[in-house]
Structure formats: C-alpha cells, structure tokens
Amino acid sequence: MLFTTSFPENDIARYVNETATYIKTQREAYLPDAAPLSPREQEVFRPFFNEGILRTTLFSRKPDGPMETPAFLKELNDRGVAFSWDRLEAITFVDMVVFYRDLEPNIQFHELVHAVQYQKLGLKQFANKYVRGLLSRGSYEKIPLEANARLLEEKFFKDPTQAFSVEAEVQRWINENKF
Ligand SMILES: [Zn+2]
Image (tube, rainbow, N blue to C red; front, side, top):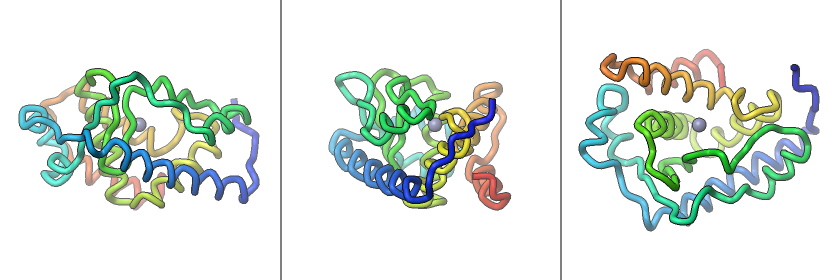
C-alpha cells in the first residue's frame, strides 16, 4: 500500500528539529554510564568497521526496560505513521547506543552502521533524512537509513567471515543520493 498522507513543510521542519534536539539530549543523558565494546567484541567487527568507530562508539545499558516513546513520535503515530519505538532493542544517538537487554552481535552491528551514518552525515543531516524518510514512506522499515543498516546487518549475519567496508557502503549510498 502506498503511503498517501502528506505533511506540510512546516510540520516536517518541526519534526526534524524536535528529533535533532531529542537525539542530542538523549545522548547527553545516557553518556555517563556508557562504555565502548569490549576488545573481544570489537574484534568481531574489525573486518567491517574502521578503528575509530569501534573505539569511540559507546554503549549504555538502560536499567528499566525499553525507552519511552517521545511525544513527537506519539503524535506521528496518531497521524498514521507506523513506528513502534518501544519495540526497538537499541537506539543510536550519534556515537552512543542505548540498549536495555543483552544485544546479539547483528544488532550491535546494525547500531554501529548508524554510528557510521551519523559520522558521515552529522547529527542535523541524519535527523533530517531520517524524519523525511519516515514521513515520505510512512513506516520505520522503509526509512532509507534503516534499510541501509538492515541490509548491511543481514550481509554480516549471513557470513561474518566475509569482510567488507561499512564506511564504503554508507558513502556509496550518500553518493548515489539514496538517503
Ligand atoms: Zn536501525
């Protein structure tokens, strides 16, 4: 089914701003308890990510279950946008991943892809493309930034011994204007 609701540009710009602010404040809130992946975990991802991403991406465990859905997303849900925030196992805020239960390696991989996307696009452009992707396509699954992360995650999951560069793949999507 085609998503036909269209949002006025004013609304879109407001959601982009609210999302960018939300990302920033969440990153700051969870930062004190965050730590990098263990050396053994980093080893698993070394064939796919550059050293900087592996060393500087932090993971922060939320002790009390899934994250609460932000107000602007509840509003979007009411307007017909499909996005179940509370079903997400982990969420990446720039260079910091919040999770609430032990993560499988493929989920860690997925979040590291988002960290690469943030690094290349910057917070503002990430928020802009994420929100516009969501509003133009109507669901979480169809956001191009998510499709990219899911595709690379699946490639890793299928054969964790087959090295490839996530950075090069994300850059290719940027060059081809796919976000
Ligand atoms: Zn994702």
